[in-house]
Image (cartoon, rainbow, N blue to C red; front, top):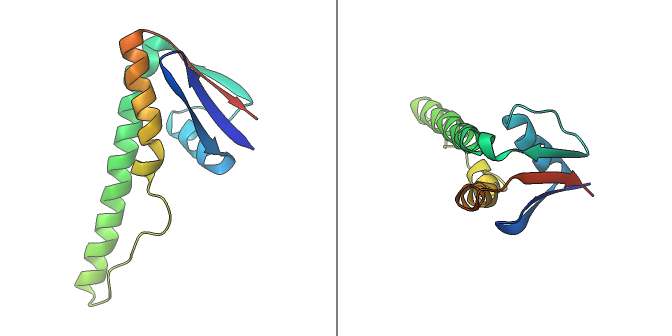
Length: 108
């Protein structure tokens, strides 16, 4: 399953199923075969994504600090970070705001 986020303002953003579902849940929605990110909601949606990234980084920094305090080697990130995963969508949102257009998503 692939999630495709589309806007007239930029290139499509494609995410694999679990990652797309994670992002949609961050936006306060339930995963569905299709959906709309309306223009009037894009500012708040961008804020939600950026807050989720900040929270993710704070959690990881806390884990590193706890490991250091316990004299353990600090944990390392595995795979793609949330910041990297949502960046293309944040950019699409920015372009969509500038062009005053909605974003739709669909599952393929």
